[in-house]
Length: 515
Image 1 (cartoon, rainbow, N blue to C red):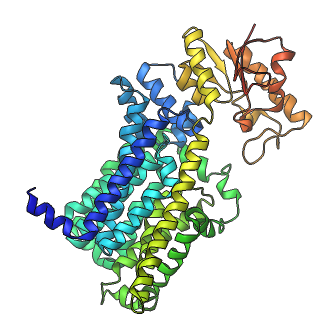
Image 2: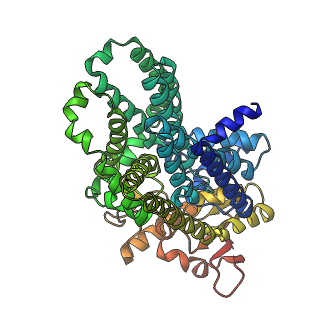
């Protein structure tokens, strides 16, 4: 690229703004990446990492294997296994599979916003995504959310820009490829391709089934999904039974209408106001629905696409799954930020008719205050949580250094301990169905009654006889998986305390040896 081309590129203020935004995002994330280093992992992180460690060093399959493989997608653990096999550690995994996709998501938000609406919408939406506290916080956590959102956005971008706008069939094929990858990392990302399919059916109707590209794309989808279909069958559809079966938590809950106002809380007041204003710009889509349906006027198709994106995800989390938290809703956020960006721009355009100065001040306030609210929250949370579960990490590393490789450990934090200690880890009692009826609540807690506690300890003692473990870890962590009797068990059974973390009179975690 010669100097003249660069000068021409930088004459466009939006291009300069994009460069500054990307530079800011890269510097900020690299700063915290090196500052945080290798943080102690949480349960879900340990779940994926433990499986990767089992595969990479050839450990015996743990007892909780079928539960993991039934409820979690296995693509990310497979990728991390390659890292471990190649001698690349956790820091490399964090950089290549979490940090880089985080930066890629910011850029894809800009590209999609630009092609759906305008460069200005793309810039503002990508700024929101870059500073959004949930997205920032999880950019340093070894979970599936960031890489899956990156792949999901890539699928949306390829679908809209290359297939819909430029009418290139390979855009649809690549969209399906990235959509399947996103689904293979996080199951709810199937909603991405479902949204695309609904949009195609809406604009093409029954003519869609006369399109050869559609049938080729469908064949590609079946081919890409066939390994997972075989996998699902092999697990006896454990995934669907776990999330939607008789014992699933989701179907026992009321419809989660609270998730809709929760969006405003998640993005803070400034951008929530912008989002509400942005929704007003969708009034022409509602009024002109008949025109859009008949495709007499295609100028509202961008709005239709974003609306379907939002609606599909809301229906799933609010009505079908009936649950959601900050990170589960991350795939919704780019669409919400696109709408909020339109709200900010429409406010600016309206005020500019009367005073350009006031319009500029309002624009800056929307962006600066919203970015500060989110980024400040994200940084505070990141700093606050950086040593969460540190005692579990230290205990696991202690066991790795001070126990034989064939040791067996009983602990509530089975996955984290398996990952850190590289020792076979067992929970207190796996067979909760052996408990008297009604002894567990909706979340799996063992009820604090004499009958239930006595029954669960009896099951534990049977497990001790069967497993013959070497160590017991008792901690304040994972209370859902720790019956009350566990805290007095070591003293009542004369177990030997070997180490406590932190080393004070009231430790958070103690390692015992069975005598």
